[in-house]
Length: 280
Image (tube, rainbow, N blue to C red; front, side, top):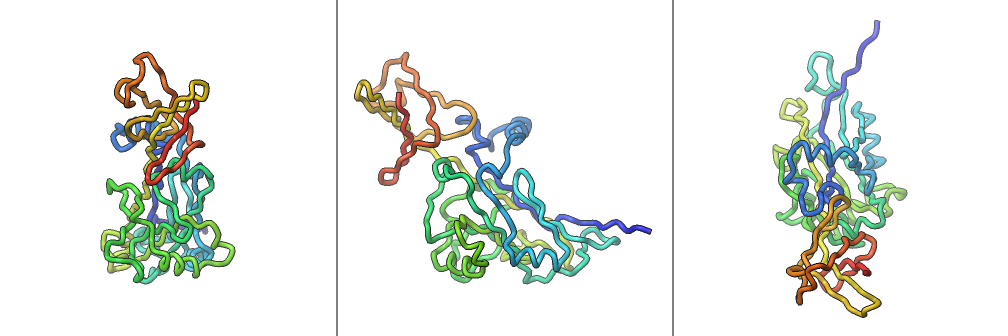
């Protein structure tokens, strides 16, 4: 006689990035469902990030009969459930259970095309529970239905960062961009993994990065001229952003002029402005 083991979804995290999902100036959020599905087909978070459970979390997952499953758009955690109730974990999940997942960036150009600031002594934290060292303005991990992009508000203090890094194993402490930290019971009931009876709620969370916008600087070495756009333009992997020579520059340029889109390789920062350099 054989017995089937059933696993149910405890929670999942979807990770999106507008550099890969926007189409020129058309945003992913504004697309039809069919267009979104088309943009998601080649999309994979492996293109820019590696997300893994911490070593400590791996032990917790084994102890509670849980499984970490990576997907093209993030990851999910599944738990063994009772045969009589697919919402009831086989091993009761304590309210103080915490699971942490490391986010490490594997694309050296990530900073160029991502609309965030980067600090060596601070990490990004995506969590359903506020650390004691963070202010009341702490930004909680968005739910899948939230229309919220990741901003510098998710960058936690140096003290919080040091505390988070200190509990990692030495082999994990290098090049940590951020952490996903999920409690069974969060600060708000909407972020809970289980209800008061211990039954699974299976919430879906989202980490949605925005693409960087830069001033486009066109450099003509032969003519010795440099012109830049009046406004910042989006950087995207797909699509094309049209430049209007009459309105996008001051002074305006000849109407017949054509201008290419920049790559993400050549970006400079001056004061608070980012510039893409295009040699023509």
